[in-house]
Image (cartoon, rainbow over all chains, first blue to last red; front, side, top):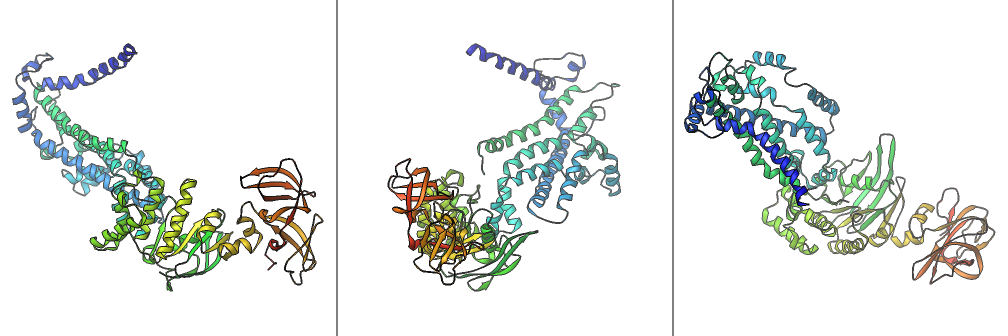
Length: 278
Length: 352
């Protein structure tokens, strides 16, 4: 019994090792100086230059263009990801609330219109979107960065499905209690969807954090550079030596906020799994 | 404390007429039970009174005030739902206090009202719990408590006992009745269970296909059903219906050939085609009477339900005291004081 149980663990540990090896290399790489990595060595043990690498990445940046310091790019990325995630959640909560709990003319048309946009990823509509943003002179602004990404058909659909499982008696009880629609939304719908919101927040934050194509297009201003785009720009085209030590330090820093969000929200996931309130 | 008056309530869903004009006057403090098979419109009627549904036609007055156009919250009513509809994320206290909080009552008054209701229902120790931590009976009490704290003019119950197990249902039934008497709040109670209806109501409204077939006290509904539907619906086992003709004003000739004499003759009914109704409990073994070929015995302990057929093939059910030996044929005599005569065409009661 015991011996047989060992194999699944061996496989799991092996999987974890393979999965985490690149991250380990990045972590180790960020502790050596540029010349060590430049020679083509791939060190497997930590070196002595961790502090200066991180200080350079954090404070002044690196790479060919001596780019934006990581602290600024991290702040930009954080602002963008938070605005996108929060905006998506607020908008989809409200639109799902309208579609599920109200009977208004064109309700199903609204629903299908939202649903159909699921089929259009950012890349498909990127040229018209860019045109619109240029005409609104939102190029190189945080608003221009966030607004095209702020509505989510997926989240609307998920909230709609969840709201449809709320028993209609709650609506009726609230009507008899004298709660208006927004009061009902705030006092009943919102507390019931809190675990769904937490789960979606994690997914949407990471979605926002990892945005690449759209920030690359709309932002030319170094002051608004996001970390994912900035990180790629640090790697040169091969005509000069890359400062891999600084790049790897920046990469480690770019990893941390999504990890933090996942850890922070994990509590809510578990709560959502343990408590089946309904 | 208020009266309730319904004036010609009609309801149409598209082309389907659900209610065909209901008139009802409920006295202050009275408990009215609306009973009927599923689909008869009883829940729709309750929802129209609550304001969750609007009537196509008609008028609703609570305490003399026309509330037809008002929102549910403005009607001064409280409703207990079939599945209780307790908000799962709120504690018992918050559930009971929610309506009062929205009305903007001062905190101290909310607390005293909830405490009072909790004491009345014996749920004081549960106030901090969430609904999911409660048993079915406790949830039921909390749902009642939520209605009581509002101190409404009118209680509405939408089959509140149907989610409970049989034993608890009997206890809660008695408790609701006691509580309603004590608080003396006018109440409408919807159910499909005739035992609930008989035991709870001051008066019953027996609904059939969107009409009030009979509005009367439980005993009157039982002893003088207005038509064959009410007669068959109230009482268990159901009333036997035998086709017959009025031979004279006071003598009924069954199609199977037997003659029965009525205690009170029905003037001018001679020759009329009728349906004779006999409750199973009003048949007793005798030397001469209706011959019954026994097909099935259901012993219930103190009594036995006998299912069988008369010689002409008409089914007949009797409820006889004690044990009935198996495999025998019986001669049964109906109690002539309890014969119900209905018109064969319309099903309306014609005997007094």
